[in-house]
Length: 102
Figure 1 (tube, rainbow, N blue to C red):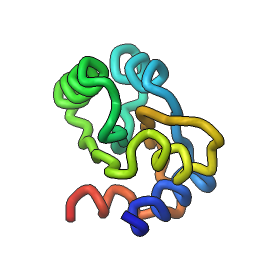
Figure 2 (cartoon, helix red, strand yellow; figure 1 turned 180 degrees about the vertical axis):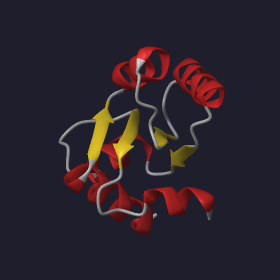
Figure 3 (cartoon, one colour; figure 1 turned 45 degrees about the vertical axis):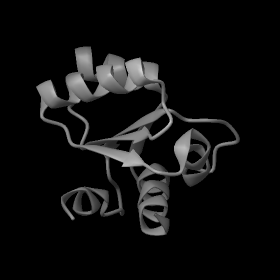
């Protein structure tokens, strides 16, 4: 998980990451740009998880489940709050797309 946290931080600090479930859902529904990957907290509400996973599947976007929960996902991006979902739009210097395939 430390590797995943490092890749999330690199993507957040050098690329473009949308933070928050509402923004992720809006991007999947209406966005012209498709996210590279979606990161979901393992303790996100079940209805939210299902909706994001369904929309991601329709869009062909891979989903990573972060085992640290919403607090751990927030901490990975150095945020002082809980984060249920995030969408990596541009990975920057991170290799988060390679973490997905392994």
